[in-house]
Image (cartoon, rainbow, N blue to C red):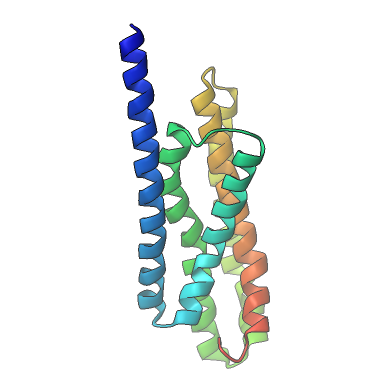
Length: 175
């Protein structure tokens, strides 16, 4: 029995290390895709901001509270990439389109906080709330998944709706 437990530990360590490498390579790939999608290094970098801050904050908190980078966290890393960058893509593309129509960044950002901002907010709330029942699960990995995904949605939506407009205003000449 001790042999099976040892094999399980070694297997999990190898899987976690592989997932961490995959997360790093996927981060780079997503950045390249954002630059190609927006045809702009500035917009590609802006699109990565919610992802970068979400990953840094969530994984920083995980390390700070002393939780290991284990299998549930490793598996959920891939979801972080897709969920966090999704809001930014919608926000930036719509803001850019609105700016083309209005010719004024301030007006474009005001429009962004009407329908698109509400849609992003509601989406984040609904998805985050959808994972909260996992907080009452009997198994710790399910609780971890619930906290992790609800936090990802909240942080990425906040960064998208607060930091992106601030940076777009600050970088107005480049945007």
